[in-house]
Length: 410
Image (tube, rainbow, N blue to C red; front, side):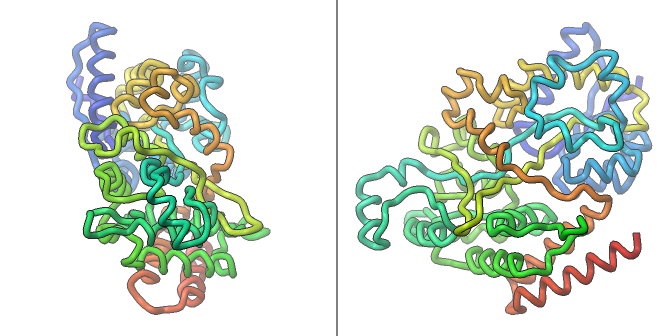
């Protein structure tokens, strides 16, 4: 047979896990098949698998597809409906082995278009060694008049970021991922919106971001990320991986990022903050509540694959409790409840069991074929907010106008 090909989200824990799983799978089944695993950045992965129809044309047998894209991928008939495979030979303890929030985004028009691979909602990651330090606590209370704890409000988030910002020690108050890749700043905007009681959708279930809470969200976000007295100067060029690495290297007191970048601090060799990290819920405005964002990665099979049975057999193997735990020990985030509650994992990563709490407050992005295009509009809007003086209200009006034009042309 021709080489078996897997399109991989570029991230060293994903790459090492997949290679180990493939080797173990071949050994267990006594097969020798050449595999080619190509790691790609987000934009390239979407382009290769969906835009250029790589999954549909059989260029890729398996691909990592995130839940932002799965509706689009299913609509384009790029990814295989796994229903018949699952009914004949379900993955281990399916579906009960997973939290319900990790099973519904890939359910489209009565089909199941992927299996959970990597999880970890957005959260506030912080240096507990700094927050628990008696001298820091005393100095903070003198300066701000209240006890130093992880921030409950966005105002506190700004104050604490300013307090811990010490460029001379290569320590910054917080770190963001502001590289415009259609993801990080879009997610940050959504989190700012939701924690102010806002929504992406109006009463008619249409995307609408032209309202007061969105103005407040964009106003705060553009101010905080541009605050040189609070934020890591590399944030402008960081994607989520680079921001996560900066935090792991001890360069920030706080980060708003995926849970996976907190757990990474405990398992990677480059980490300088092992045992010094904790996570909690995101800050929120008075009379509102916290929120998280649930975007997760799936294993999918290409509709054009000539090796669909082999691909599914591998997916079953790659999603067992043992494989899920391996992903976690490599630095990714397992999706199974068994991994979340595993005593060994929680010994290494003491906050791992908190994943369930994050999922209880996790919201999802709209499932519509136009969402990938909408993310481009929002991404550009946030970038303009950071780089120009154009008022937030005007930027939101322009973006909403572009979204409505897009809806009309579908």
